[in-house]
Length: 93
Image (cartoon, rainbow, N blue to C red):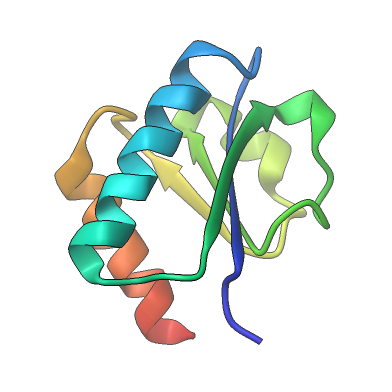
């Protein structure tokens, strides 16, 4: 099946999730991965079926424990951390 949709979530669905979305799009481009839709939202507006992969900050880790695939970021502005974790997830697919 693979990852076709990535959802970046934060508490309000505005600032930090948008920033993470932009970084996810950069990392996908860096990794040469195409055909993946990236969206952002507040965590309260998504369900575990909203995407194939969720990217959240460490503060939301407990709220996504039931989600199928989650990348938890220690530093939401760190592109190297994001790239390392995304590369691992896509290699496992």
